[in-house]
View 1: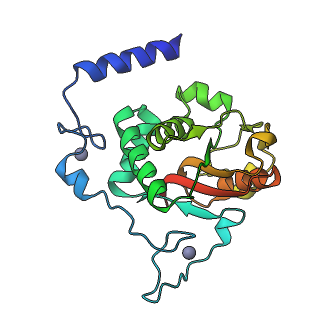
View 2 (view 1 turned 90 degrees about the horizontal axis):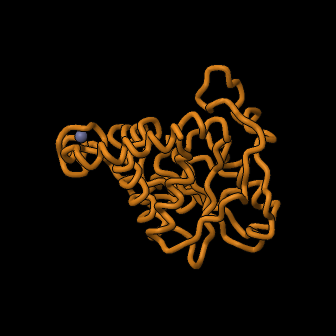
View 3 (view 1 turned 60 degrees about the vertical axis):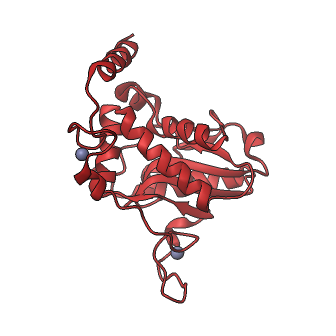
Length: 232
Ligand SMILES: [Zn+2]
Ligand SMILES: [Zn+2]
């Protein structure tokens, strides 16, 4: 009931408020000029990790964070306007910020992503955290991206069976340890033989993405590519 009320007030506020910049809230349509200037799209680089390559097209970055992951796609780095958009979307539930991120993610996937009909799977949020936050940001982004690309979101395939601490938490000594055993694939038949696009809002160390990708591959997914709004 409380969530419904919060959504209703949000919708009403959106309807009566003048258009505001999705990143800073100043009056503007979509983004104000300073925020737009601060929104740097990442130039296309290495096909695997997206980092810039040498003039000869060689990637010198480590791909250790991408074990089990075929490719990492991220339109933005987690700085400036893009970082602000993620925070406003995730913490304030700002839908305009979410739509901007989803649009960039969909464009990125369209240009660099796998061919054919991939299956979208969102990194699941634990029930308790979803209740606190009021919504599941990765699933929200997955649905918005799916609509833009005409793809399907497979929900309930990958589930979180144990709550983990937020990966940035000071008490998390090992990010890999924090997510070990936290996920399970419930419907392996849904991913068997498929190319899976695993979605989340941010990619930092990649511990969560790696864990989920490993489970999806073990469940029979042909390959797993990761699509996030921002990478650190
Ligand atoms: Zn702004
Ligand atoms: Zn690379």
